[in-house]
Image (cartoon, rainbow, N blue to C red; front, side):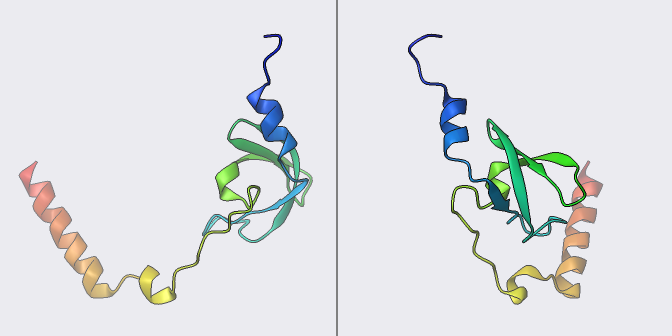
Length: 96
């Protein structure tokens, strides 16, 4: 399509050479990786062992956004809470 700007070119233009993985609990969380290319909403990155992988752009700090961390007490489940959840699941299972 002549005369129109490509959205992909725009995304590539604004993509840093290196990004940090910010996705919580991702095996590479907080690691910096090299960006090889940007394809839509994904980045193709080079890992420390030399292999490459695609990762969603929002799982990185590519756009300058770093997710806020919740406190540990907001992310852990109590034994009682898990038991209540299991009870609710049993009730739902019995209905179907």
